[in-house]
Image (cartoon, each protein chain N blue to C red):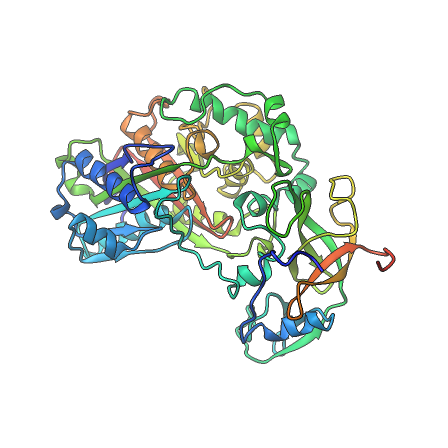
Length: 139
Length: 382
């Protein structure tokens, strides 16, 4: 469990499925039935064509490192240095996350390196999708 | 709207700048408003339109004793004031009001009566999908795209540091600038790490301050005591409140769209621009602005800056007040950029650009979320 003092999301009706999914270690994206666009963050309509017919799909959890910073300032729930990253999911969308299970240094965090999801529970309700270098043995 | 049909006839910053302990955020709005009224030789009763951000326009009108026929509380972060100028020009042009006061006040450092207009609740899209991963500070978020830019275009740490070095040279000429001591690339790269690759000398200041503008029809402008500054062209746009969802981390869609609208409506070329204000909350922003506004091809702005083209004596003076990096930055910096454009076109800037006739002022808000661009001139085209 990471620190409880991190900012904790509160689901809305439009996003409840996403947070229900992460609790079950599923990374749920949405896909438009009309135009096939896959998107994130969740909303009950397609941001590309405005279609309201949308299905959930399971992301593979594979991603690459698109960009990041390494935070050096102390903050509740974060122990400096900490990476704040944007990852490129295999399915197309990007999401913010933290890269874990590796040194928080520029030498260890190489742009476009392959990543895989690692689940971290904040509490019984909220589990966050973190990412780690791909191929690391499960810790 | 015809280019140059609206003019800025009043412009002033707050009396104090930097640390203001004797005023709340609302009080700073009012102080700046009174200074702008005095600058234009107007009374509150002469104002019939009001716009502000980080404050409720109804309260501002009430506090100042203004009875408006037009109100605008558009909040788009630091570029809100560029959008206000654009909206005010359209409102005056269409007859909704005749004389608009635009105010900014921000207790960004002292946090007296501080208020920000953005929804950051845990239920918000930022609260759910970014804040759990990032302590919500501009230094942690606004900066995230730059490593992508560095990899894709070969931008070096030394080139990025040069943005701060050059702007400090401008600040050295400005008595109101917070930091005036010269700095070197080494100083920048040795300064305290905040959010890699950004060090403290590549991050904006945190200060208190405000500013206000008064706009009216250009036909009336010669009746005022100040040199009129004409609105030649304007643009605005937005992309996303989530920095993680920008289409491309090496370029801002909002910058490109806003800039294009401004150039098209002004009917000018890039070579016509004598002076540029490029909102610089962090050192990478002038690089993005120079490219996304079309002054330079992609990937060439850092070299352009490092070769001193934007420095004192260079061919395109940029951020001549010292910018958010050295002059001041209360959080929503756009008003101070507009004030410097007005000073340059009035010919009263501390670091005056000789014969400046056209100034472009480009703002960004909510990180790369939104953008506003104002092109101003001190000559009225025929």
